[in-house]
Figure 1: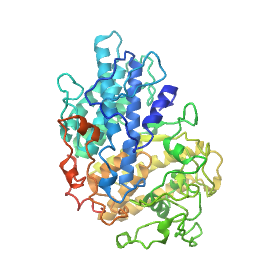
Figure 2 (figure 1 turned 120 degrees about the vertical axis):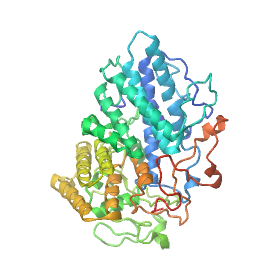
Figure 3 (figure 1 turned 180 degrees about the vertical axis):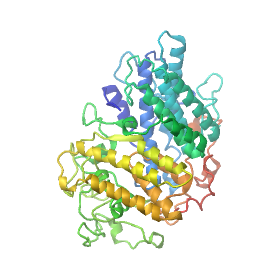
Figure 4 (figure 1 turned 180 degrees about the horizontal axis):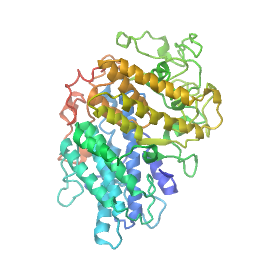
Length: 567
């Protein structure tokens, strides 16, 4: 993975697209079958594909993390806080968008829509004199993964009639199972194009620096995660046996950010939100912070930076009670409702100042008190009990990553698919996670070395979790595995939402603040822009009942509200 954000034009677009999951696209009139304006530069077209894909990964990860308590979710009612426009931007970037790359007078009009530009690349490859197999292979792989992700989120996607405006002016949506099958075929086609190590023709490969063999490993790994969802053990095992998948950190699939604040700002979006002159702006998940603190997980010092040694209503680092504060944390004065018995309703321990799932309180003046993002993966400060403040340029300066698919995730997938004992995969997944997270100490700046976890400390924690897993049974065993998977997914938790719906674990996550928040979303609504502009697409029936209960095709668990059990 090399310098993801290298050029000014690239940075301008990725900053716009990855600004957060609540971003609203202003132009909602573009259909999935609209083609972009003609653009003949294949390198620009592939750059547009890579940027659109990257923007989508940030949004999808944010939504998934919030729903599964890896991040904080605002809102007591799921339906009211997951509006039908939440995926408008993702949908448009997957298919076609009017947004264009800027800063290149020879390439004005290149759309950032993935399918639009894939079709343009295929046309250039078929009718031109230059071999664009690399461009088409990469674009096809990213489009296939995007289709799979849309299916996981919505349950359906457009494909068989999409991208053909002449014949299908208003494309219908295909079933989730059909989309998965077509996407897997597309991945095979992409791999075939990349097999011969074709020339990159000078394109800026923002992920793998033009290494086709790494792209093929990614393609196989996307197949692996698809086989996890569908339970296809035979196909999964065949890829594992081949060894040609993301198995080491060197092949990790991720977005790399920089530390430039201006012209352009190429920092991690979470760093840009939290390390400001006015303090932090993101609330971290009480469930995740408290789980890691109670477990003694050394990774918490990399994930989070505490600005205070205690939280109102909780215990500080010395175990002393911190006075309640109506101004800073109004919920510290509230007696938790009965359904929150045994959970952290408001105040986590030892200065881990965040919010619990569904908390919809207003924002107090706690920007220099709440816990901020740390050095992993956002490139912030390492938590060495300094309890300082956040600010511009501190820590790693924002030069972090956005994980998409890491080798540690794949080890957990092997555990999911294992017919017997999962402990070996739990152990190897944690080992890879700790190695990657610990490496971020290199960008943390000045820290007190006394608080940097040693290799022995990390190994001891991993061994204790494996022992705990081996000694447990039934639900307890599944919860240990799932909790460690979710903690490992921090920063790029798209797969957490999938796993939670697939298995119902962990059952230890906090409930919503609201006793009756509505059913847990088994899928999201069809993007509003598509419903409004396409007469052949109707919103889901359950939307009329203020519900999000439609299950995606691989979710064969009991209907809501009995599943997932923690909700």
